[in-house]
Structure formats: structure tokens, C-alpha cells
View 1 (cartoon, one colour):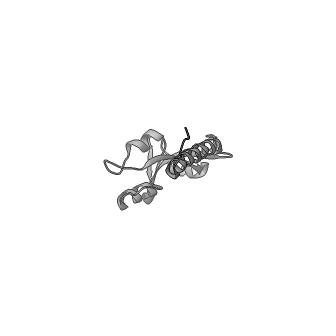
View 2 (cartoon, rainbow, N blue to C red):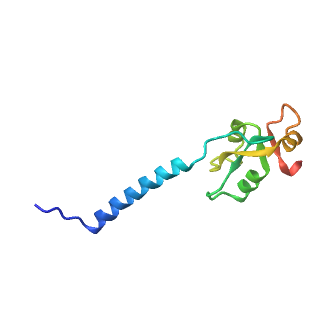
Length: 112
């Protein structure tokens, strides 16, 4: 008994193979989380990259820096925000200028 493969079967299997190869390459190409070199300090910010968000959310994301990841997650511009929290490296001098008081965990760059 002969097995007949259609063009649709071929395309489905080819897409699965390409997807598996793409995932394998992407996983091996991701750099590990390494601390910043020199005198950099890691802070966090909200990113809307690759997402459709409101203008208010764009403005909020572009102008806020957070000391901790949890502080960034808790400070969504509005309920239903699609932004994700990402690490952001700044210099030690800038860090000292922004987070000069021990109680500060969020900085609005528009007011600095």
C-alpha cells in the first residue's frame, strides 16, 4: 500500500522542523544575565516594545526608572497594561543622582 503525501502535509512538517530549529538557535544565542561591566548599576523600567499601547502608557514607560523589579511591576500606568519589566543599566554617577535618598524606589525623569 502506497502512502500519499499532499503538499499540505509537506508544508506542515516543514514548518514544524523550521520552528524547532529556530527555537533551538534562539535559546543558544541568548546571552546569560551578567552583571554590568565597570561602574554600571542595573535598574528597571517598563517596556512597550513590540506592543500596541496608549500614548499615556508610552509616556509613563519612557520617563520612569525603578530601583527594583517589583516596584516596576507594581507601578503600571493603568489596569490592563501590556508593558513588561526589563533591566536597564545606568552609570553609577547617574544612579547616585537619581536615587540619592534610601527611600526612593521610583524616579520620574520629567521632574529631575
